[in-house]
Length: 446
Ligand SMILES: *Cc1c(COP(=O)(O)O)cnc(C)c1O
Image (cartoon, rainbow, N blue to C red):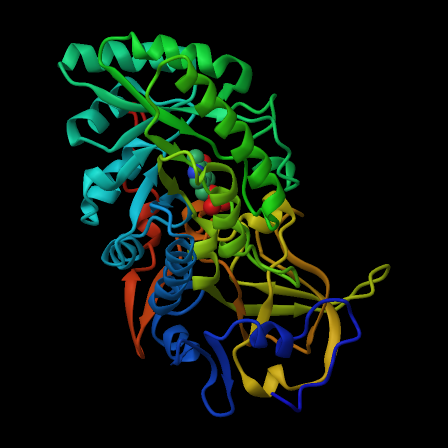
């Protein structure tokens, strides 16, 4: 890669993107490798767009979290927030590493169970859970239900008491802390929809202790996503620690604090969130409270473990009034929604070393969907890319495939997993007929 020219743009160039991602390597013959597997071989076999997950990267990420936890000496369980990527193969890899699951729906409960995750390692979060979802969680025997309101506490009490069981409950506290992240992924401000207001939490905990079918075991919090510094975590955990001391002083038992997720990753040139600093914030504020602790990372585990392969359908020359070419890809916002939803920046690397090593230009990278928001990159400094060239969109392992839709009648993309030099298809490309398989005609139109 030493012969790659340097970009003049502030964007990290191909060399910098690959240097920061040891799972990716450019090979002079085979092109871009992910965990040692040529991505061209996967694209040849499955076509594009195709998601590729790296099992080795998932294990390395969990290992780094575990090492930080071990160094802290604290009893901290990892419950992977499976909404980040709920593929059964991903869950299976993580379950074998001893990781539990944080779920937010009955569907995720069923998926976690299908992947073989023990209900005792599942916690149930979410601002609104239906009666059926709560019942299913109680039948399964999940470890804990994170309750987000007084109303939900009453709902759960009625259901659990009716079933003759006791639900272990944490109250999700909204600490009113600004996570300093994108408005659509911040969750710990007082006027966000999530959790119980800090000022109401102690009284509600006391009330929970008297409700049939409810055993309050502690508190949970989750202040947002893509958080890169420990300060917001520390501020939130300080507020939770105060609550623990307050309710204990009132005579109530507290055995558990669930510290949520939100640790961020490096998409562009940020310094990724540090597990040591995250665990350090937990230890500093909660470590002396003698409680069982848990974290719920999603993005930090899965994000860097995935790439999206796409092909350039055409190169549209700049017209009058525009300066830059549009590279139109066969992946679109229906596949990867993050750029259109959050203006997210994702690295883009050609699979071919010839292209990756070639001269540079500025270009826009867009999908074919009929929305201007269907844009993966604007004014991006990239090697000169022609029709037919393949690209990898980096760090798409979290909030990627799970957020896909079939908008514009675009079937769901194929998925593959690489693991120790092997690869396998883990989801066939959706056949176009499947888009209307479940549709029915009213008999007057038949
Ligand atoms: C989304 C979510 C997480 C995971 O967030 P990440 O930013 O992916 O780590 C954890 N806990 C709860 C309650 C969530 O809603």
